[in-house]
Image (cartoon, rainbow, N blue to C red; front, side, top):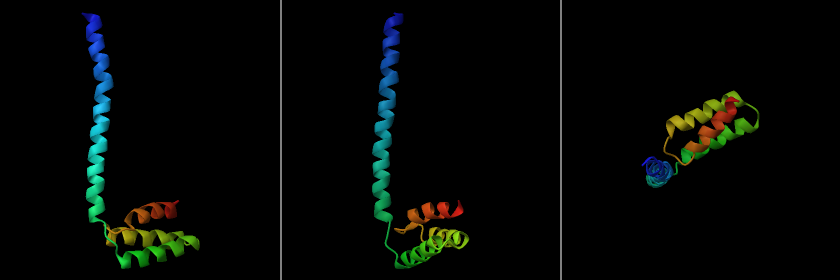
Length: 93
């Protein structure tokens, strides 16, 4: 009885994480598709992002971090929002 219970327990310990992983991948895929549908090109965001990158490349990290933060707050669904998060974090370092 004890060995059969251990076998069931081992099967559950293997199957349960696999099921969770599959559910995570499926839900992430659905979320990714939903986010892709809502991301839009904004010329203003592009212009401000390029300006922020210029400040970053010139070593004006305080200015760059402010500009990247502005892009994030002003255009959260733009094509440059993720890049602004990453570059803004780099500017703070």
